[in-house]
Image (tube, rainbow, N blue to C red; front, side, top):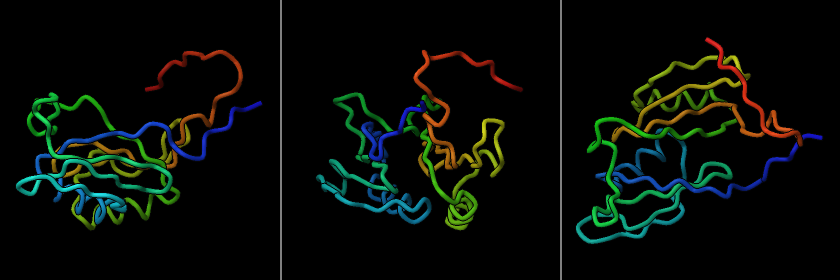
Length: 150
């Protein structure tokens, strides 16, 4: 019997941006997020924010150097990419391209059944938008290891 996937998330990525306010505006315009809460800080910074896209939520803030949190522009590479399920990746891709998103991987059908694309936001965070949904292939059996193709 397949496991059901929760209707609402229980993991909320928190991203740092050098210009968090501009990033929030861009994420809403290019990727379709909705800003639900923005807590301003001194000198135009953002202490905390919550943006939603469908049932997913991300938090965006200005860097917090005392906590070791910086934006990706201050790093030599990225250590993560965010994967977001969307119902219509073709329309999402068109919206992102129109808004000037840097496409890292063109829209395509994946071997594992997803259709999607990879983009980079203006400060360097990488995003995959597609029909992929973790858990779709899970069952009650113990975890398995699959060989990667290609």
